[in-house]
Image (cartoon, rainbow, N blue to C red; front, side, top):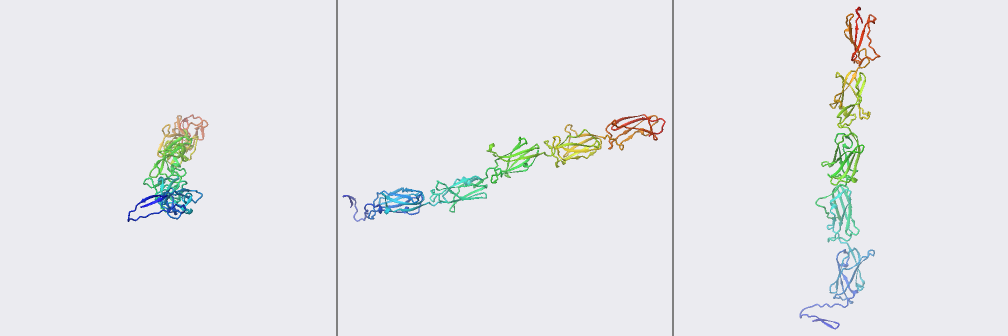
Length: 561
């Protein structure tokens, strides 16, 4: 039988069977705090931050004999050696093992150097001993770090900042509570390469952030590495990343085409819009909304058109047609997308030019001004023409008018060569008047034929050919005038005879009317060299410069001149 006596009171501890072997642990006396000791991994540097650390306190009495009973309370403190931080905390758990040992557990949340003190009743164990431990970060495992959001790696817009983050995780998958890692990143957008170091976020341990601005549209690839090991980059869907162009920019958008430099009335003009963002990236979108406005000199709107997308050329195409030859203002503007057009205050003006619209192809000719009702042979005459397109825009004289033919024919269908002055002018408020000058020596009806590109044009008032009259010159020419009649050949004495006088001008045209009063037709009769004054004669104007002369022949004379 084994028993113990405390304060005179005996207590049986049990019996041991005969023949058996037992071990009896005899404890020391009263615990001496100064003699107690501590040991274990939690007291050996380095220890990982936020990892559970343990060590053991063993109780001894004053004689150095181990105490094998428990029941004591211990105060275990960790205090930072950096006085600027002032970090200090107590162990979370001191477990009494009941055999004179105590297991201490603690977890440091801040890295750094710490002193560990173990006390009971303000007395430290180990004769005032203290332990120095260094709390270090846990190793970050790149394969477990998380990069986000997926949208930052899947899509970007040229010129727009894109933000992404990394949550550093240790090899146990827990978030690091310190930000001591260095993450490198590279961004490839099209042929553009960007790289840098991610920044630790203040107040968010273990969180890192980076911002990139891609300016070249094209395939997008982001890589993040830690100590040469690449992180897994999440993407939205299965597609690779892509940088799309930014918004339409006024300075880089290209507008070109023949319809931007000249326009002809009645002809369909073309121009092209190749939209780009501020960095020169072409915008292939089919839904962009471009409009052109054409206004007259008074500011009034003439027409407008909407650009259409050509899939094959990835370009926008505009057609317009004007009917009036004038100066117009042509403006091109960007109105957002077809589905979401911009409000008026947000519309982006792209280009505005002054454009001169010239008349279209010559289609019609008309005579204006200057064609008199009568001309005199030998004098110069002139008249003016206007040539129009199909929209009655007067044309300037240029090479296109080679198809204009003027034919002047007289009564006998003889053609007169004319001079066509191909210099444009403005006469009496009429623009682009083309002067035609002519002269003819033949009297009669003068017909003017206007033929443009093989088509004749008539007088719009009479729907007939243009014509005028040419009369002979009133100046009588002895060279071309003549006389004729039986009264100049043979007459009977004492009988009445007659002949005709044909008065012509120098071009052999009959003079236009009766002789004016200051001119006279003088007919004299002679015998030998003597004038006969007693012959009765009469003169009468017939027409066309023809005068009839009648007289009574002498009865006794055989021959007269």
